[in-house]
Length: 560
Image (cartoon, rainbow, N blue to C red; front, side, top):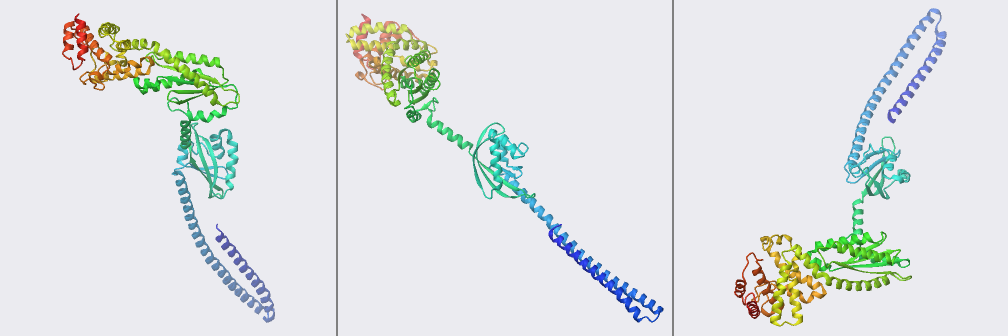
C-alpha cells in the first residue's frame, strides 16, 4: 500500500474512535441521567416501568441512528478509499510498465552500442554487456556474471588491483577516465582499451549502477607499433635501418669491448641490371641472414642502404670476427654458382675507450675499401672462366665455336696487322661477345638455333646485358662497348643503336664477319654451307651488314 492509502486508513481509524467515544459518553450519560429523571417524575412503580420502556426505546432508536450513521460514514469512506487505492494500483502498474520499458530501452542501447559497454551494480554484479563487448572479448554474461569473474579472466596477475580499482568507481558522480588497460580475451588475445566509467542511477533495488565504456585502441596501437617497426627497420631484410643505427650509436660511447663491422655486397647494381631486381632483393635477404647466422646473437645489425650493412658487436673479438667473415664469404661463393661475380667486402674495428662509435666506423670503412679493391682484383682474375662456364651451361654457346672464332681472329689480326691493344680487344670480344645471354630465359636455347617466337625479341637484350657485366669488371671495361655493338650493321640497320660504318668499333666490325662466317660453315644456323657458299653469302651483304674493306680482306685471307 502506498503512502496516501496509509494516511487514509489512519484517518478512518481516528474517525471510528471518535464515534465510539461519543457513543460511549452519550450512552453512559443517558443511562445515568434517565434513571435519575425517572425517580423524579415517576409517581409510582407502573409509571416508572412505563418510562423505563420509553427510555429504552429512545436509547435503542438513538443508538440505531448513531450506528447507522457511523456505518454509512464508514461505507462511504471505504468506497472512496477503495477507488483511490484502485487508482493508485493502476498508476503503479503503468509506472512499473514504464520503468520496465525504460530499462529495456537502456539495455537495447547498451546491446547495440558500437563500443564495448558493461553495466554493473555496486554489489559487483554484471548486469549487461554490449554485443560489441562480447564480440571483441569473447566473454558473455554467463562467462563473467560478476566483477570478480571479469577481472580474474581479463587481467590475469593484476586482477586484485583491478578489483579494488573498479570498487572505487561506485562512489563516482560523473564520468571519469580510468586509464589504458591491456585486456586478455577469451581466446588469449591482448586488447588495448581506454576505460571510462559513469554513474547512471539506481536500479529497482536501489543499487547504484555504473556504465563502463571502452575505447578500443588495439588496431591503433598495432598500427603505431607497425609504423615504429617500419621507421626503425629495413622493410626488405627486416634488419634495423640507418635511422636506428644513428640513434643508438651514442649509447655505446661509454661501453667497453664494443666493435663495428661493415659489409658491402660487390656488384649489386650489376646483379639488378643483369638478373633483375628480384634477384638482387633475394641476394640482399640472403646476405642479411648470413650476417645474422654468423655474428653474435646480441649484435645490432642494420642495413644502411643499398648494398651497405653495419653490425655493432658487443664483447668484440677480432679473431671471431675474422672467422665469421671467412664463413660468410665461403657461403656467398658456394651459393652463387649462377652469379660468379657476386662477392662481399668487409671492414671491422674495435671502439677505443672514451671514443665514439664513429671513430671505429671510419677505421672499419678504410679496411672495407681495401678489401673491396682486393675483391675486385680477385673477381676479374677468374671471372672470365666462371662466366663462360655458366654461359655454356645455360645457352647454346659452345667452347668449339669460340675456338674456331679464335683461329679466324688470329688470321684476320695478322692480315690487318692489328696493334697489341686492338688484338687484345678483339680476342676478349670473341671470348665474351655473348656473355649477356647468361641472364636470358633458358627456354630461348632449348633447341639449337630454334628460339621461341614469343621470346625471340628477348635475345636482342644480351648485348646490353653483356656490356653491363663487362663494364662492372675493371679489366674488362675496354671491351664493354664492343660487346654492346657487335650486332650493329654498317648501313645502320643493326641494334641496339643503329650505328653506321666507323661509328662501330673496329673489333665489333671484324667480329661480325668472323661470327657470321663460322655460323654458316659450322651449320649452327641449321644449314651447313661450304666455304665458298658462306663467302658468297657474306659478299651479298657487303656494305650493308659488313664493312667493305674488312670483308675484302677476310675473303682474300680465306681464299689464300
